[in-house]
Length: 112
Length: 115
Image (tube, rainbow over all chains, first blue to last red; front, side, top):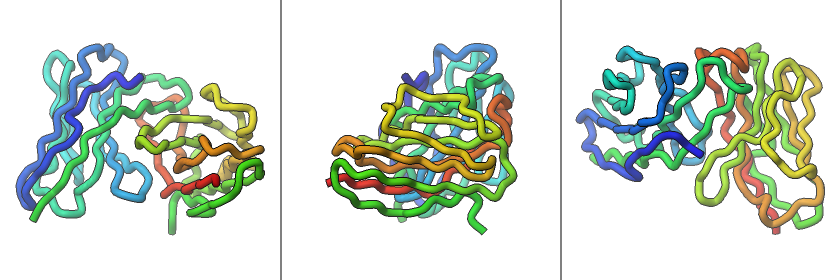
């Protein structure tokens, strides 16, 4: 079973920041938070991951609360091409064969 | 160049048939995976291979048999296809199976429809 909880859907206006929340209240000290997204009819795409500190890359920023029980993925300037299902996943540091456990994700709709 | 490529993209077949889906990655990764996405859009791991060796088999029926001729290829053969096998099958790869710093790279899926 997935160890994360996400809202099923969200809307965002084009050009605005999209803030996608994720709860992972049972996360352990040796688990990372990963974010993937799946654009319609494509395979999941890696976005970003983090352990304790906030992270930023060319796609997004990841904000992890101090107690690590929740996180927020931020797309700073959402475009129509960011419309997708976003998955928040917790993953062991030393992983059992690379397994990712996907939940239902958040369906983000970016509107003009 | 496509990093993880699957063929075919669409596969329509009748119950009872045997079919194969091919996957190739040109990323030089050691680990490859098969995931299944059902009609409710849940993505679930089926198998993972590291350097041609089976690492994970997630209680998949014996009718599903992965084969890895080399570390760049992981094919999925399905015997005696059933209606419930209809789904989208995704192949993925990563540099290593045990390092969490290794994100998975997914192919674009094979949509299997069993009639």
